[in-house]
Image 1: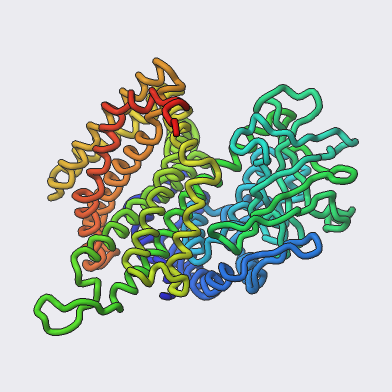
Image 2: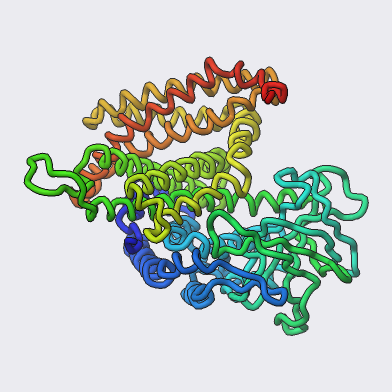
Amino acid sequence: MSEYQYPYNDILFSLLSVADIEKLTPYLDEPVDQELLEAILGEAGKLSEQVIAPINASGDSEGSRVENGEVIEAKGFKDAFKAYTEGGWVGLSGDPEYGGQGLPSFIATAVNEGVQSANLAFSLCPLLSHGAIEAISSHASEALKAEYLPKMLSGEWAGTMNLTEPSAGSDLAAIACKAEVDGDAFRVKGQKIFITWGDHQMSDNIIHLVLARLPNAPSGVKGISLFLVPKFLLDDAGNPSQRNDVQVVSVEHKLGIHASPTCVMSFGEQEGALGYLVGEENQGIKAMFTMMNNARQGVGLQGLAIAERAYQQALSYAKDRKQGMKADRSGKAAIIEHPDVLRMLMTMKSQIDAMRSLVYVAAIENDLSHLADGEVKQKAVARTALYTPIVKGWITEQAQEITSLALQVHGGMGFIEETGVAQHARDARILPIYEGTNGIQAIDLIGRKLYSDKGVAMTALLEEISADIKLWSSSGLADQLRKIEAALEQAQKATQTCLQSMEKNSTLGTASAYSYMMLMGYVIGAWLQVKALYSSQRHDGFDQSQKQSWAHSVSFYCDQILPRATSYFQAIESGRDSVESLTESSFIR
């Protein structure tokens, strides 16, 4: 089992060569220079490698358990969480008014890549806290912000999202959890399932954000409100005191992420859990999407992170494992010398490079959507909305292939738990499911993002790709550009086909949604790959070996990965009828 290494150079390369971090400079009080960025990433690497990664395998073996109504997390996790919070990592991009450091969120994204690669199960706790912090910051009253944000940004208190119910699943309109007025607060009653880190002993309090319905609320999603429900109520000094009417019923036994307690939570079995309204009555869906969109980009980052961890282990094994003879028959060869193993490794690496570029480009756009104003802000808001389902959906689909290939590189040893590589595949399998399945991401892309503005935002993106292709025409990248241009034409045609299908029938039109999401992921990935290579040729900060490695990655991606876009294009153009005609009667046994 190889030790995890924070990919410092690759992250810095993506940020400096692709993500255009300088776009943020006009909107920052203090610009983020390369020296500051390198210092932060260096410390993040130490935290991930030395503190969090060593408890990944042990946490997977031990898992979590419920004792006397409390969740007990795996050994070492509380100490790691303490190191994480005392290092100030929770509040890195938080509001300085409440104790945050006020840095752009792309820096937190770069830090979190390492945390998530090192230990995906551990990383889910701060991920959910970040989502809760953002929802409270964006929607809560000033009084709630002042009371809860400082302790959450310090990491003394953690946060959760409580959305899903046994009878509702992804259908939020079916939520049955109730809330009734009790003076200046509310009493929340109901059950929630699949609550990540819904209980633990790593923080002094846990702040649950809970979707529920008020009496006489409208039906459907228009009648949902959001409530802040602490595990421990606060005394007059603002410290945790009396236990609220919130209980963990059980933790699920899962395929992967064993050390992350996925809880069944019960609110209000006795007098009702005391909660406080976040935002306006019946407007909880807005606050929920603030949490959800934050989490969706975070899950896309998890896809990148777990793919990176699996790739590192496969690469290390391929260098060490001897099997078969060298080409000159002079002795046994390391399996990395075999062409098919090289193919698998570069299939992993080239997609990871593209995934990482997309993650950080999306992170910069997200920062611009909050920091900029006027037309720049409007464009960034639209681009962030467009990127989010692709980041979550396309990247987590690639994580399935990459973690599976890591097992394949190990051969039969990959199927043995002791090598550790199987854990990455098991952990990765949840990513296309939670925070909105990838089918939901695809429908979101083709419906809320493409069809809602009649393709304006997507057309702007495709036009930007086209402009870059023309800009790079004299750069010596003719072969790659020709292949991207052909794929871009397919993306443009598919966009018009999908718009026409949605116009004709917005329900049946979603039959092409998944293919469209995957097509756009591969095309955007190719664009960013070549952008990185083009930029690196003009950047003196990277050595020749790194530039050469990226050149191999880009060539392989354009030759071996990008052709997949054509199959999705063909499915959209000529295969819609076979999907749109499907009904329940198509599946007779």
